[in-house]
Image (spheres, rainbow, N blue to C red):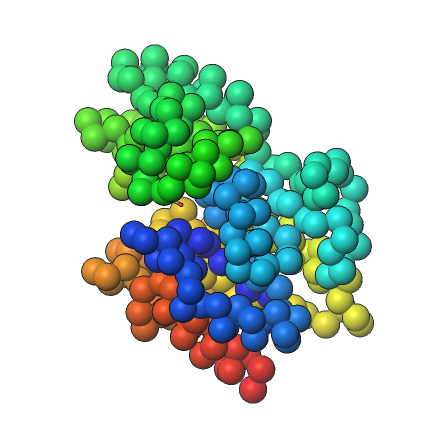
Length: 271
Ligand code: 2M8
């Protein structure tokens, strides 16, 4: 069994980024050897910090499925070929950050609107916009692949999507930020690749059960690629685009709802 999880609003509280209520469940999963794989729009530096804080040791997926980072001492499966960076084997799926930045400028020009992203803002401005601490905001600005930018209020979503596609990128449109992503990147693509790696190393090719947890439309293609998709609600309920799929909805927002939902689904899977 493998758990794939989004972070903001899913494992971490959407407003405060708190995760403490999930720690006992995370400790149990570690004891049982069940991998917990973050699949997030956050950067490698942000995820590395979180892994250290909560004691995760498994691979992780950064910047909306732009890259898979596998610790090179990871025992779960044989390392696939690739480059090593800072103790990780890196499987890059998306474009580089310089390409995303150039793409954002070109899209802004095409739309005739200024589009401002993390690369345009100081650390203090990112603190203001996100509520992250100074150190966390610095880690969020250390982007390698994608550019989060302020969602333009006066551009219809379809027009933004068209302009982005015309420049050869993908976009995940959020209420506050949208993310400009390389066309080959995606949470679903990364999840499929990781499942294949685990599956290839599974004794007697036993089928691996996958659980996925997410809270927003950018988690859709991750949730579509797991056996047990679970939707985390906010205080106002589940996101409308995830609510009508017939997927299980956690009984509370993150992090409490994450812990309850994981314990419940595991009891069912293991039974
Ligand atoms: C951005 O991501 C969130 C969703 O996770 C968003 O789009 O609102 C990213 O820049 C991420 O790196 C950062 O940690 C987060 C902070 O709220 O914002």
